[in-house]
Each structure stands twice: as structure tokens, then as C-alpha cells.
Length: 293
Ligand code: NA7
Image 1 (tube, rainbow, N blue to C red):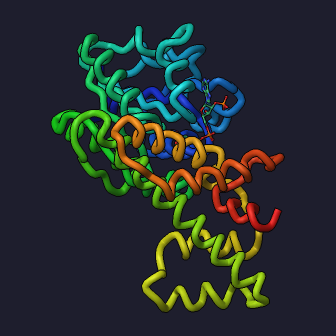
Image 2 (cartoon, rainbow, N blue to C red):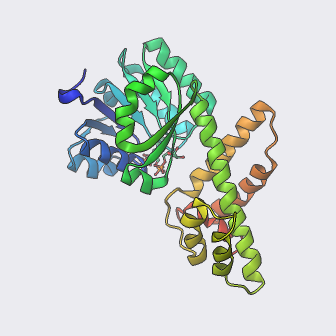
Image 3 (cartoon, protein in one colour):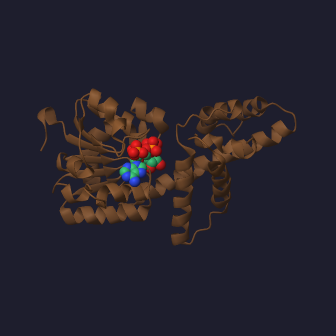
């Protein structure tokens, strides 16, 4: 089922902030791409660049030997896989299915089992890098699943990302992704909390950031998110509503495993407050609004 020059027939479901640039990079690399999105107009840019627009997730799966999904959360993914005209029923024996949404490890394992029954090879492959990483083709993939399947998927992952980590069987990619997002959420929350303290004391936030940049507290998060916090500009790169969702998924997993995550539980309340008060879609760095609403 491969098209010319070893290019795969790729299907992409979910054309949000992340899915659109990932799809664009696949087209630029010469792959044949069939797409579907709940809100069809979000496919316009990709269709103009050469993608075929399918009428349903089922039609995407039937047209593809490599399916990629990138939707918001577990209910969205269950809908596109098992809802009306869902993709699962049309996945071809021998094809590869990669999900890059952030979902629960248990749902990843349920999908892997359903795929195995159809002779489909499944990888959970959530990403980190934000929408700028997706645009530049520099995402990091955290992979759960079979090593040989990963080997086969690597040329396609390499179009969208710069690195991937094989972390264990299905579910392992999602487990590490939830741990990663927990760290990012806490780091940004801690930075916002410290900025609230110094600015209330009459010291400019920039001063704290300057000191941090020369200390052990420097970090990638500081480089990328401190400017948002200092300017109060929160254009979504990674939306707060999705970070809030991921903290909930991390706490659910912790509950299942019997691990206490007290700092995560507290941070989720802070993000929850800002999410409830927000009228527009915001980046997760808007957690600062807990102190400056
Ligand atoms: P976005 O920009 O919020 O996009 C989410 C996508 O999921 C978008 O295509 C949505 O379609 C789709 N979606 C949401 N709910 C559904 C349902 N019920 N059925 C079908 N499709 C749905 O998120 P990002 O691109 O930033 O993130 C994607 C994932 O990566 C997410 O798991 C993050 O945590 C990490 P719409 O356009 O709204 O019709």
C-alpha cells in the first residue's frame, strides 16, 4: 500500500494547533496525506497545500497505511475511533497507527488491544515541543509500543520531530508524557508564585528572572515562558485547558498506582481557578492570572 518512492499513504485526524503544522510538514516531505477534522474549515490550509479531505475518520483510515491522530483528550479520541464512522473499523491489517494526543495510559493500552485484534500495529507517541516545535518539525516523541514498529515509523516521525525515545510497551509513552507535563506545569506555577511575591514587595519581576538566569534555577521553561509572564501575554502555544486536562490525567494515574502527588494536586487547583475565570483560550503560562486577574 505504499505510494511511489517509498512514501506512505498517511492519514491525519485532528487539525488543531498541533495537527495542522504536523500535517504541513508531512506534505512538504512529499507524503500523500488524507485528513479529517471535526470542524472541516480547519483543513483549508492543508487542502490548499495538497491534502485530500475525507468525509469521516473511517474514510481516512481506509485510505491510509499509516494513521496519525492528534486530538484534544481521551473522549475526543474515543469519538474519532469508535464513534459513528469511526476510524478503528477501517484500519487495514498490517497498517501502523500512531496516536500523538495526550491521553491516559489505560486508553492507550485499550487502543493497542483493539488494534492487535485487527492485525494493526499501534504506538502511543505523545509529543512535547509546543506549536513552535510542530511548525519547525522539532517535536520530541515519547513512545510506547513495539520496537520493530517504531523502526518502521521512524522515517515519518523524523519529518515531524527531531528525536524520539522508546520508553517501554504501549502506555509507557503516555506515562512519561504525563510526568513531563506535571513538571512543566509545576515549574511555570512556581515561577508565577515567585513573581507574585517579588512584585508585591515592589521589586520588578525582571530582576528575579535575571538572577535566576545566572543561577541553578535557570531552565528552558524560564527562557520560553518568563517573557509571557512578565508581559502578561498569553497567546496559546500550549493551551491552559489542555495542561489542566493533563494534570487531571496525571492525578488519575497516581490514584490508580497509589502514589501521592501533593504538589500536582495543589497546582491543578491553581490552573483550575484560572481556567474557570478565563473568557478566551490562553497559554498555560496564564496561571500567573491566579495572582493578577
Ligand atoms: P487543539 O488545538 O485544541 O485541537 C484539538 C483537536 O481535537 C481539534 O482538531 C479538535 O477538533 C479535535 N477534537 C476535540 N474534540 C473532539 C471530538 N469530540 N471529536 C473529534 N475531534 C475533536 O489541541 P492541540 O492541537 O494543541 O493539542 C492536541 C493534543 O496534543 C492534545 O492531546 C494536547 O494535550 C497535546 P475541532 O477543530 O475543535 O473541531
